[in-house]
Amino acid sequence: MDRRGFVRGLIAAPMVFGLGKLGVGSELGGQDAEGLVKIGLKRMKELGLPGLVIVPPKDENRRMELGRGLFRLVKGISSPEADDFVGPKFQAVARRGKAVTWTCVIICLEEEEAWKEFGETSPRMVIDERGKVLRRMDDPPESVEQNLAKRLIDLVHGAKIEHLEERVARLKKTLPKELAGSYEAFLRDMAEREAPLFSVPRTAEYKKLVERAKAYLEREPRLSGWFGLALLRITSRKNTYLDALFDSLRKDRLPLGTSMPRFVPMGCLSYTEVKPGMAKPKGEVIACGMPSLSSTGGRFLRFVAKVK
Image 1 (cartoon, rainbow, N blue to C red):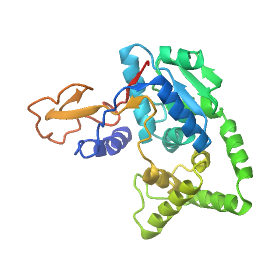
Image 2 (spheres, rainbow, N blue to C red):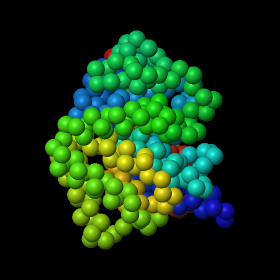
Image 3 (cartoon, one colour):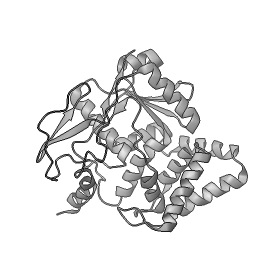
Image 4 (spheres, rainbow, N blue to C red):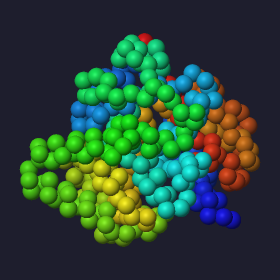
């Protein structure tokens, strides 16, 4: 097996066995656009983060492709089609994916909804806490999935993450000097210490570090952006404690207006999606454990927002 196949296997394997136990698919009901935007703006203010409005394409195949791309962002997984899926840039690709959901609030709206809320229908728009459109990407590439994390970070935070750096610099000025120094030293230490590749340390010391990070974030939610910036600044090709920390702290921060589809096994190498309002198919059997629904292949998010 070549390295590409080895890496893909490492990523896909955890998603194959016991899909039901992994929560594959708590399907959400429809959400109206006005409510989504209201929730998004509130979350942006609490976290001190910008918003990213995504208008999915109407074509079903391209919507599915974008849904796969967004799933990988949530999970911090690189697209297997990306040029740098393996090799020296692999860690940077994974870090960008993890950082997206930590450094902006994502809201997915249909064209009609986006026009009603913002008077624009660009495929991707950056908004501030008041709902004002700051930047937009009007010409979607042929593939909406390839290198999605990098393109979104360039749009939201700038090609050199200058917008995120400015936001974090403003945050630092609002914090007591001693606290800001403590946060900075903690993040720097985590970014410099190497961790086991493809795994999270299991030591008692590491568990204390996770609890410390949780306490920091609970005390000051706006640190989410600072944590994300620290992750994006890492240049090491190896896994660091900060990488592992994100894996330990990460929750499935699904973009507003999306849901994780529900799949049920229908036999060896066979799964079917149960869509909202549909009854669960009869004759469900236990899957044989073969890689039939991998995280880099079949997994995706659905767009569920509805016009009010």
